[in-house]
Image (tube, rainbow, N blue to C red; front, side):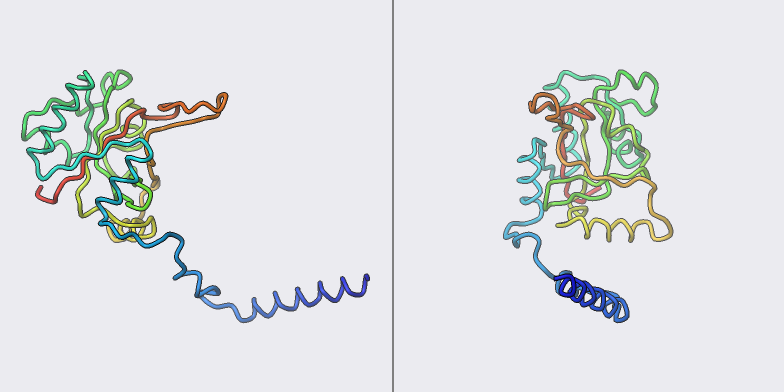
Length: 215
């Protein structure tokens, strides 16, 4: 019995050594093309909207700048909020152009009710938003306020995270941001008595405004 075990072990080690000697750039060529998900029949925007809604996020389609402002006004009136923070130039230019009130500094930030940011990409497959600290919103604006509003262009939609990473590398060819993360719906936890609690570690509400590329 010991001889058999030793023989099996030796065979396994020999196989490993051979594999190491024959090392290739891609040792599992079939894995790269294997389908981890079923093919989507719907468009990227429809897939993203469905997945975002399923995880508790809110999807708002905007066909241009005016639609963005109209939806923002309606949303802040519905939420009854006034302390709205936006730090990113691309967002601020839009808000300022139409006279939408916002705070561009971090003064009294502990009282922030809403954070408005841009993003790096929208991942349709799981309804996630990719952000990084390369934007002026940094690490705080998308995390601290209880309501997070993301303004994203339709051209930022990708199917999978690998496409989002490729897009990120193209945008930052010389260096990658030190912090890159994905937001998948509102912050949540079920650690306490297995009860789902929203807003445990970040925003309780997530809104994604998908904007046609006209600004």
